[in-house]
Length: 152
Image 1 (tube, rainbow, N blue to C red):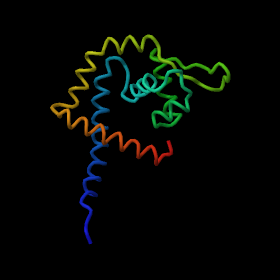
Image 2: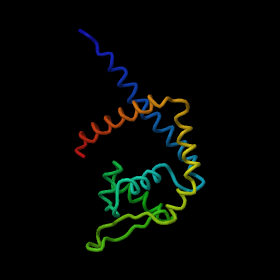
Image 3: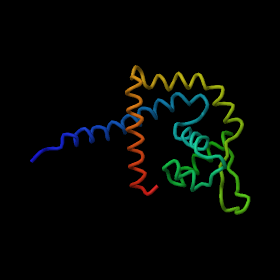
Image 4: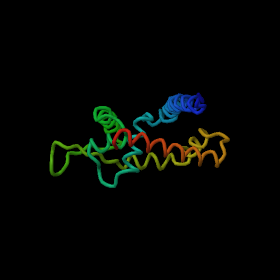
């Protein structure tokens, strides 16, 4: 019986992704503490900025983030208190909540653009461009596989 040597590598990668995620979340929280945002809140802001042209509903935002409605609503409520986004009632159906970034949000990230570029670069150290491109391609494939499994 031939053993699948890739099984051990796959298990190690699975664990390392979680370890890397936890470390980067901790580092991100430290980096963002000066503006009062956590990495999870940052992800919500980035998701709004990148994936939506029009203010999304709570369901749309939660699905895009891969998170529960409750978690997204709590993150958004804290970001609204801090002035980073607005939570609005839908014009047609008052039961539906929509989310829109504020000018304060835009101003803060524009003022930090250079600092954030340096920070992101520091996370990759001396990893080569070829390795970064390969890693991105692999992660895109893994994200697609997991999305299929979740029916997204």
